[in-house]
Amino acid sequence: MKLLIVRHGDPDYSIDSLTETGWAEAELLSSRLSKLDIRAFYCSPLGRAKDTSRATLEKMGRSAEILPWLREFPPKVRKPDGHGTVSWDWLPQDWTARDYFYDRDHWMDAPEFREAGVPEAYRQVCAGLDALTARHGYIREGNAYRAERPNGDTIVLFCHFGLECVLLSHLLGISPMPLWHGMCAAPTSVTTLITEERREGTASFRMNAFGDISHLYTAGREPSFSARFCEMYSNTHERHD
Image (cartoon, rainbow, N blue to C red; front, side):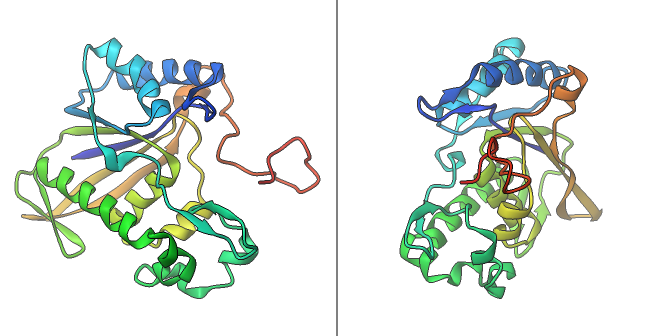
């Protein structure tokens, strides 16, 4: 099975939709996805994800099932400086100072996370993902999957960067903290995971590509800056916070 995780287009958060650039990115994405044989589409309930999916679904005459747990990873946490922030946006000097943030089993031990209900939200997403893979023939058992109905189906998820890293954390057995802070999925990027069943009946997911934006480059379009921060502090025109 192939699992395609798609981040929404360049967002206009003020109206939970897309910017003009985001709509153009979604159209280019649709030209790519519409060429594929896709078994099922699933989408976040948030407007920017649904709007990103629209061009693809209309072009293919398809619909997407809305899954509440595909919304952006929600908990707000109190940063060390006392200000609130989303779970997946810490300053480097704060999160890298705690070794347990790199540990897949203990990253949720942060008091800020426990106070904000991050462990419960994380487990809810993981349960939703396990139910989805089971629906498509792969039953989570421990850290691997029982291939109950092995298949080569392609499944597409339209969602968000923070949520995407939670999905990858669960599928690959990695703390989401290095993913949230060390990787960046540009708007309309496509991350591909493919099952491997090297022995009959037991499968795992391997990431074949992360954050692929070849559909943008093919059209001569640079990716949006959304989800990135300034390359140098002196770059005052780029986002710092």
